[in-house]
Length: 279
Image (tube, rainbow, N blue to C red):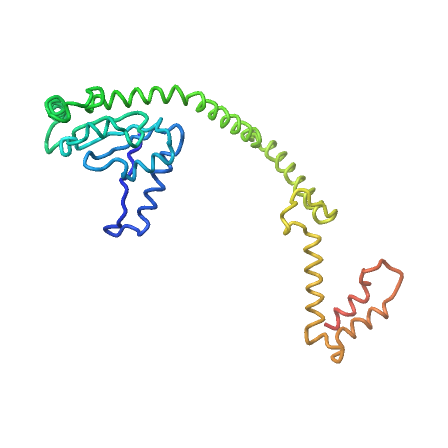
C-alpha cells in the first residue's frame, strides 16, 4: 500500500515551480499498472466530477474496475451525499465507502462509535446502505479487493518471475568460473591473453572488424591511414617544406647514394646511420 501525495497546484515554502507536474508524474507511476488498485479519497464537500484525482484515475482505468472511492468528512457535508453516491456520475467500479474522520483527541474506539451513531441516526446519512459506510467496512472491502487482485494477477506475476529467473540464470552461466588455485588463474589469464592477441591481430593485421562493426575507433587500419594522410598533409603545408629551403634534400641525397638490392620501403642501415650522424 502506497500513500501518494496530495495534488498541489501552487508552490509554497520554496517548492519548485513544477511541483504539480512532479506530483502528477509520481501518482501516475503508481496507478498506471494494471495490477494496482486505486483508492481514491474524496471529500464530501466537493463535487466528485470536478476532482482532479478522479480525472487521473479515469485516464488509466476508464471502466473503473480497479478504482474504489472513500468519501471523507461526511459529517461536515451530509446534504445530498446519498444522491451523489447512488448516482455514481464518475463511474467508480468498485464502489464507494463513506467514513467519518477522527476528531480531536478521540481514541480509535470512540471514533468508530461516533461514526456508527452518525450513519444510524443522521436524517440524511442514515439513508446510505450500511454495507458501504464505516472504517471497519472499508478495511473488509480492501481485504476482499486485495484477495481478488492477488488471485487475478498471481499467475502473471509468477510468469514474470520465471522469465526473470531464467534470464538471470542465463547471464550467470556466462560468468567465468571461480578460481580454486593459482594454476587455474594462470590458465584463465593465458586464455584471455590469447583472445586479446587474436582480437588485435584481426583488427591490425587482417583488417577484420566483425567484433566491432559499429565502433569506428576500433577500425585501426583505416584510422592509421587517416592519421598518416593527415601527417603527410601537415608536412607538405608546414613552412619548412618549402622547396626553396631545401626540404629533405640532404636526406634524399643520402638515400640516392645508398641504393642497393633491398626490400621496398625499408631504409638501408648505412643511410640511416649517416643521416643520424648529421643530426
